[in-house]
Length: 174
Image 1: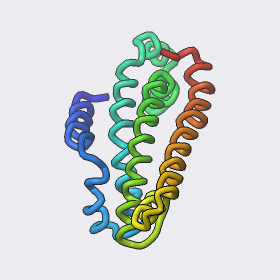
Image 2: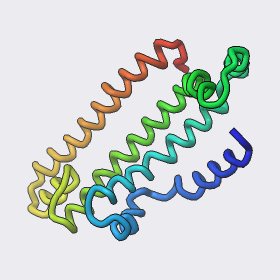
Image 3: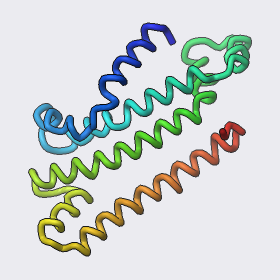
Image 4: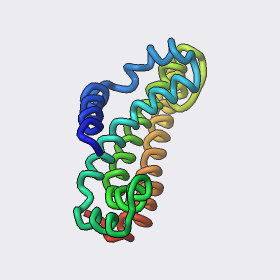
């Protein structure tokens, strides 16, 4: 990576990473209207910075030996990135994806709360919101429990499986 690219990434992440994704929802609603476009926009913001920071850190941490092996095999450009940098940085990339997932999950539930209040429908957040308004506390807890269980499933089944099939299998566990 070039110094200019690294500086640009650092500047952008310094500006946008601290900004809660849900704070962008009013702009997203103006730009994309009510619906999927706005939700996708705020979810991308939630994921992008964690993945970018961790990927960049992972690329920088790839060992000089790996880099030399790639050059000795004549790898350059996209083949060098695909065969050397991504596998070497994969533990960091996976960490970024885990963090991004957690941010995105919280943002999605919050966005559904907002969209549910303004559009009258949509998702677990809306379910929680509607049941809160009806003072149906058991259903609010059921919605929260569903959010928790889905989060645990993604963390402990999906991410753990990916980690076992890649990072642990490749002997890269730190």
